[in-house]
Length: 176
Image (cartoon, rainbow, N blue to C red; front, side, top):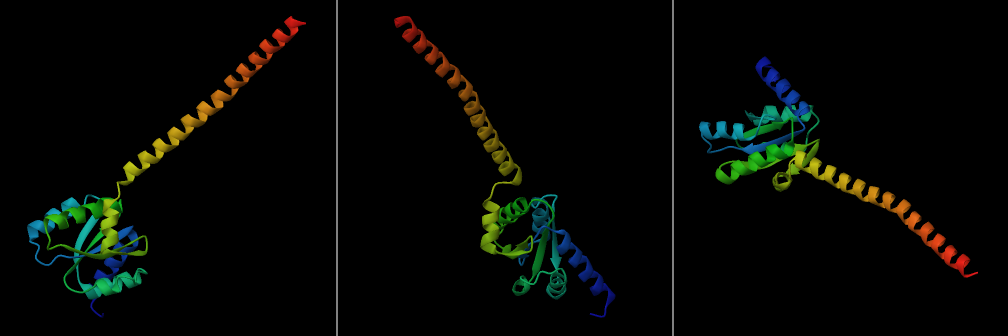
């Protein structure tokens, strides 16, 4: 790789792999330029879709410490580099692939772990990060409410028990 333009391309791709939380490899054979533009829009702000050269991208992935994708670099390849929520990008790819069967999801990597095409589709079926966080917050709030009612019930039960003991003593004291 003596040519400086190729070295620069590898360095740029290596940086993209390192700075991305996820990368999804796709085959785009048969997509028009307009469809590719539409796909880029559907991925959202936190993903960048780039048509790449297999050999250079394979070298860049290996330099970034990702060797699990080596088998996927065949045929026309494009990579979606995801810097934000990987679920949002996976949903965008899945939905676009439903409408345009020419887009084939090959696989990818998420936080250094290899993902198959099926795992990416499962990732797309997840709810977004915001929805999951709000559900978690709701569960915590419900548990806090339950704990508060338990803690509130203890003193009132103690008061009722003490009142019952006083009434019983008054009955017993009044009978003597």
